[in-house]
Length: 415
Image 1 (tube, one colour):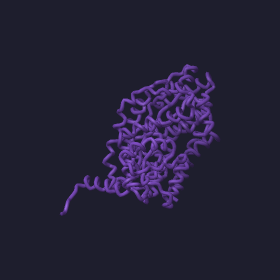
Image 2 (spheres, rainbow, N blue to C red):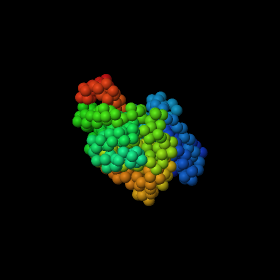
Image 3 (cartoon, rainbow, N blue to C red):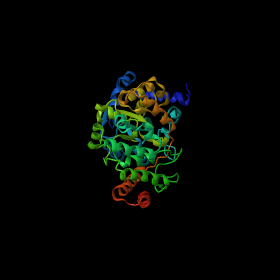
Image 4 (tube, one colour):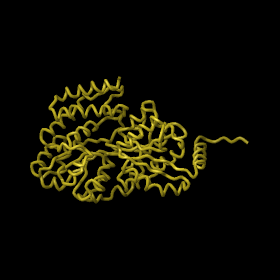
């Protein structure tokens, strides 16, 4: 007898058959901290559904992880079944052609697009429509600040957020009254400003035709703000993620930090846990909204257990309970919309002085546009950071520095 199945039924049967065929097997999942904790927390629930499928987690520091994955994809050796990709690397990995196109059957990931926060799928979609990763968590840009330091200086939250100029003016009052710096690095204000208020479909560093746009007014203004912060002595000249950076938060020598909402979890768990209750979170200055970080889950093209890997990725990303468990455990803000309406979002955050910060972040995420990613974003970022260093450290003219950066990017893209 001949049977005919719908596409959905066929995919379901394929899924079940594949999982059965891989019974008593192990999936290797390559991550960076603190995603290793997310996976370990998820294993018991996964095992209830797939008791014969074990999960092996390998974890490296974020830079080392992406370097290792670059090598693995290039050489097809030591490939994991599932790999985490931070959003800043997604364009480069997509361009390399080493990641499975999840837009195609049997994955058909596009069917889930409406279930996720607006801008996520665009970040992992190539110009020819390939989807190279499923969104796991996002990083709504936020401004963390030390309320105790602001109180000593007579500065309000509104003074920080009214405008970018008001933010710097508040920094002057803070520095004069307390000796604390407004920010760790002048690069902080540049990195956020160039991402703030982009329009739907815009790129950070490139236009829709792939041309670098780092001499645009957006970059000029970002450099002007960073230079002003340096000239006013408002930045501590500290490299992000260094020991000195962490110490500045522990000791209260830096009053604010603009970054993704996930930084709150790092501050409370390992950077400065003893400062509980002293921090607050609010929106970025000038009513700006920006994405800062986020994680995608991908499958290498040459992985051998693709259907089972896809089942695990769907388990992590499309189930509200798993998304919320990750948020509770490691402050990984859920990309899945249905997970964002849990009562947990309205609960006070003890580390942030019992502020209901998650509601602030949820609202910010809803305002962030879907922007265009380029495989050359990292190349451009390096050139722009180098140009900024020339401006703030060596007093080079802003327009000249940006023109040099534009020329360097053009040369590296076209060679």
